[in-house]
Image (cartoon, rainbow, N blue to C red; front, side):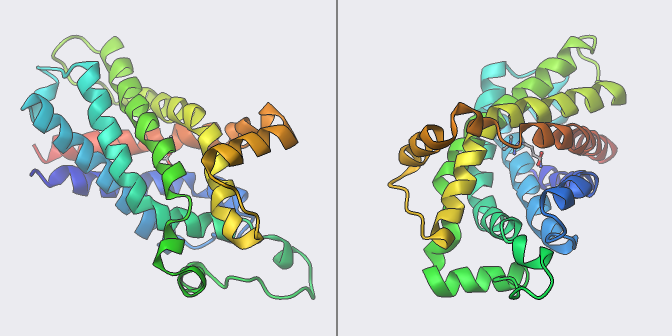
Length: 264
Ligand SMILES: CN(C)C(=N)NCCC[C@H](N)C(=O)O
């Protein structure tokens, strides 16, 4: 199994997240200030995504990353490989994402001086508290919704990227850096537009354990959210997700492609 795609995925994920960090900090109102937790989580998850994607394509088409420009895979193969990467990355992402969402939603006490200290003191304390209160399964709360969000949307992500690269690149040639930046940026936006409705539901299910708010399942969460807040609820965060997605994914794909090219 070629390993360089995993390493390139890790490095490019780390670079992308440095760019996306200001957006995450805004979203989390300062609770997610440090870089070590995102690097340990998002970069590792990106490594799983790109590594599994490339190895799935290798299994489906018997072509390596370098051979794929001359012998481009079909969009069906790209979609299946992207979905496979998305499915596996969702399970690695689940505990980290839960911690992020829990920290993100405890902004009130910090905002008011003299109010009680926040429930979680940081990512490690948050993980330990969830583990103590809910057991190991607690760390995977919302994982099912996350898998549903990431499996098809990462198929869409790689198909969009490939399609845009092929539109602007003569047959058999390597896409220019400008093309990779634009294709990566739009792949990020397209996938986040498709992912946002399930992203909203996933976050609500992840918060349910804390708020003593019980949903009977994913469908119940969808129906009761739509009933109470209208259909607009499924598009909450769409603007910030899209604004963040362009630079993050442009840089992720550019560094990924450059690293693999330089390693030959
Ligand atoms: C749920 N969706 C849409 C995705 N995971 N899309 C792929 C983008 C990955 C990148 N690290 C980012 O955070 O934008």
